[in-house]
Image 1 (cartoon, rainbow, N blue to C red):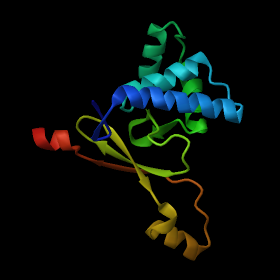
Image 2 (image 1 turned 90 degrees about the horizontal axis):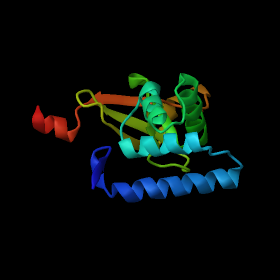
Image 3 (image 1 turned 120 degrees about the vertical axis):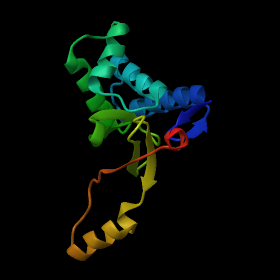
Image 4 (image 1 turned 135 degrees about the vertical axis):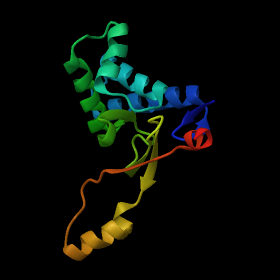
Amino acid sequence: MTTIGFQNHDHAACVSDTLARARAQCARDGLNLTPVRQRALEILLREHRALGAYDLLGHLAQDGLGHQPPVAYRALDFLVKAGFAHKIEALNAYIACAHPGADHAPAFLICRTCKSVAEADTAVGRGRLGDAARAAGFVIERTVVEAEGLCPACQDHG
């Protein structure tokens, strides 16, 4: 067992199940899940933490899949657009999506000490922000919600 966000889970099953779902979604949607893109997703899943593009590039280079930054950035761009990963703006880093294939509005809980990230699903359209948008005649297309604080492990050690 490893921690996903701040919860324990079967890490091996998480990685293999998510990779299988990604392959199936790409086949269904006509997306090209190249070896570099698949390996990038696998790395994000195995790490279960936010990685910068250069961190990812280091892993890809060790695997012989490229040494130039565009390799990592192209793979990350694909993963984000396909819904397999999210960019964590506060960290300028990327994390595997905890709910790939689901239409959701994630919020990210970022530990300021260990930098672990948990993905929480939000219902932006039904909350105060959704109410304010409707009152203004505005349609929300995308939100980025990131909260910084302390994860349970860092609270225990603090």
